[in-house]
Amino acid sequence: MGYRVAVVGATGNVGREMLVILEELNFPVDEIFALASRNSIGVEVNFGDQTLYCQDIERFDFSDVDLVLMSVSGAFSKEWSPRIGAAGPIVIDNSSAWRMDPDVPLIVPEVNPDDVALASRKNIIANPNCSTAQLVVALKPLHDAARIKRVVVSTYQSVSGAGKQGMDELWDQTKAVYSLGPTPPKKFPKQIAFNVIPFIGSFNEDGYTDEEAKMWNETHKMIDPSIALTVTCVRVPVFVGHSEAVNIEFESALDEDEARDILREAPGVMVVDKRDETGYITPKESQGEFAVYVSRIRNDPTVEHGLNLWVVSDNLRKGAALNAVQIAQLLHERGLIGRKIPA
Image (tube, rainbow, N blue to C red; front, side, top):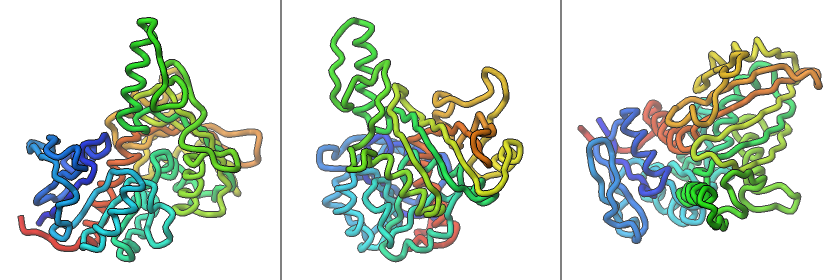
């Protein structure tokens, strides 16, 4: 038994990765469709050994599929996800459009799998922000053990979080620096090559950015609204892989050894934490991997019950495409996807 699956936004970084991961995880697909805007009609993408040709979303009959993975802008999703959901399939949306909608579950399968049952309200499930996804995978088992009181996070986010244009800009600027050419910023507000930019998204009135607000709002929705969380989001000249320096204050005692043991048993987490010069994970090493890596686990002596962590993950995978496919797997395991098609 398999499903009829559509990927909307199939030509983008995340859309292509969704197709790759559906095949890697052997998700039960009977037939798959690649959809995009009219500008991308006929563009080739791959699903395993198959070559798919992108179809026009405007002309596609969504009542004929069971599941839709969306990798599009928030504005596009606002228009299309309700229309698609009303036609019958469940929509797993990677944009920010539906994350805080009270009738749309925001899901990381390792964190709040039972919320997937709420999908029937609108036939839409939201995928969290890429930085939030890896953060909550690391926080949830620790919160269950000792209840988190406060978290301070500084992110080091790769340019792929800004799409292909961001990756192209880092590549072009790096070459220009070596050739002593101009490096005018286009996608980012300042030069990203050999630089860091402490600004992602747009400013809110309180001086924080919407990217930072997403992280605490989404963490509150998925884990616990009582957690006090403050964030600084920084763009760094890394192609793929987000990193986070995480400081946690707990309500009860939890030392570094206990935390290390808890995280080693936690779903989706891989602990790499040796006290030597290579005993940690960098974003380069996380590329192409499924896990959320946790390193540099150590006590924080400045608060009564405190820990510091270094958290790294492939943002195109766990931060986007992988999490979406894992949600699809969860729906499949719980029998929540509609019409099944005989293989």
